[in-house]
Image (cartoon, rainbow, N blue to C red; front, side, top):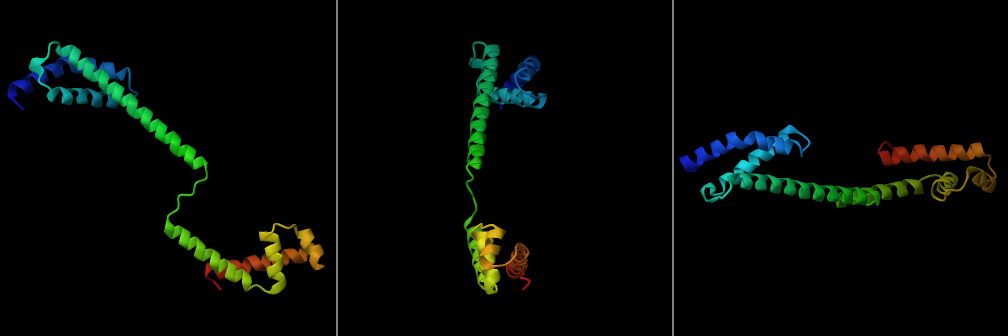
Length: 169
């Protein structure tokens, strides 16, 4: 950068920095962002030939207004994206990777094998209660047991499956 241009920018900075910071401070939520936007004005100004401008002051505040417009657009895009992501989360879309799917299938396979290894009445009672959602009283009536016996079969099945699938069998 030429020394004369640097000197001009320094003079413009001394003259307009307080006004720009005040301009941005009224329009953005914090002082740090106002300072950043003020700095961006001078970066853009440094990329322009200052000596060809009719009104430097008007040009500086045009850059400032454009920065605010750009920020507003960026915020709207981010808000729209955030809303879209939140809406997708509400659709119960499961975003698991293929490794999780394979692991889940293997777990289901070992769970089904463990259910098949249960003794016959316990297996039937467990499937009726946990898979078919049949009430304990209906199962007890069907097998000729009391409800407490059905509960014991379900508990035995759960303990057996937890040990078998959990790797403690």
